[in-house]
Length: 225
Length: 274
Image (tube, rainbow over all chains, first blue to last red; front, top):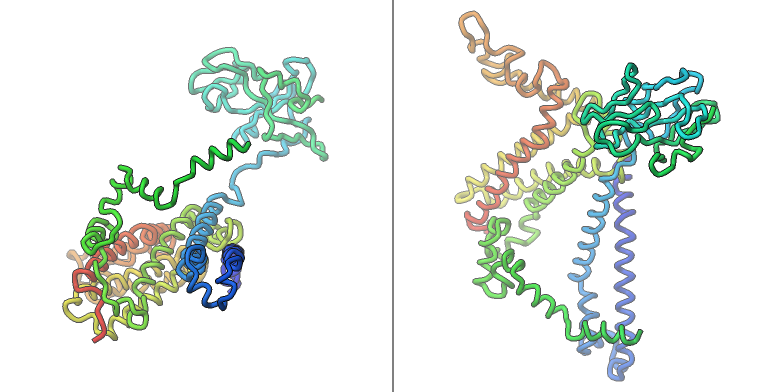
């Protein structure tokens, strides 16, 4: 039973404002028609009912809008618009069944010096690397995107060769993400990394940093330890 | 500024809705779609009806009594309208519903709690109840007005099949929420298929269908097994009912509806008062 009430409530919430809007528009149009007719001497003298019947010319659009068929078609068109917009909204889900763009990745001490952490590759598409920064030489952790900058495949970390190697077209990257072989035009991208209040690493995939644009100098792209 | 306003005024001067409409009607695009033009004579009206795949299912002329609500109750039209509503809302539900044991029930809950507006499933469900009622009332009206008599006896039979299809659509849709009610309703309902003559393993004559010592109709080879895709209501049954509900039965119903409407036209229109 609450379902029915909810359904009625939701339909009413959509339809009532539209109907009110149509009625208001109609009233405004009718009002304007009356004012213009009152300006005419004959119309002012005649009783209200006879005005609509006798006056020609300007009174016609007023009657056309007032007619029940006109109102019915307008209401029908409005309900169609409401249906179409509700359907459009329906296609954009409120709940996503995918991993969040921001996630906590454990304590910095869990990583070995020089290690490429593959724990978050499958679910979040992120490599955590504890190493020195390629530009400043500072010690810390950075989060590399696992998307190949050539055509978007996922490269593999090859520990023996100490490089990221893409299986699709053979692009290769050093541990710091700089490209050195294959068709790829630019280095891997970094995600924003910081420390959460509880001391865990916090990776934010909403901001990315590109080396070739000089964005790796941004302190948010590197977690100094 | 005044110059710009003047030029805009000049641009629209002499333009009226009638003239714009005229210009649109003279384009090749319009003429390729609407070949006859404005149907202002009886001949053109007939050509419009015959030239459209949708309209040609309708009679060219309808008796005035044929559209009198007190006579027809408009129940056939309402049934068709509800079928269209159910097709549309059902299509939208398919974007969120997954017919598997893990997801079916949660997806139905999410359709109410999480999906935008949250009424699409309610509209589908109540629309389905309304359609079953409307179909019965339509049949009642046709019976009471004697519209099943020749030359309409064939259309009555098409209608009876459509009634059965409506009930089957209702039955198959009942399982999809995958709650206790659905599970046991389908378990009980499909048990009837056990008693199918010759084709159900508990039905009359099933024991006769055998090859020497081997019984051909058992609980893993009878009508109920074919319906459920298993010995009990499980994943196989859910998927089967889903496919029947969304594709199989609507397809057959749509096909028969086209015949049903076409036959109204061929058999002399909606029957009039005696």
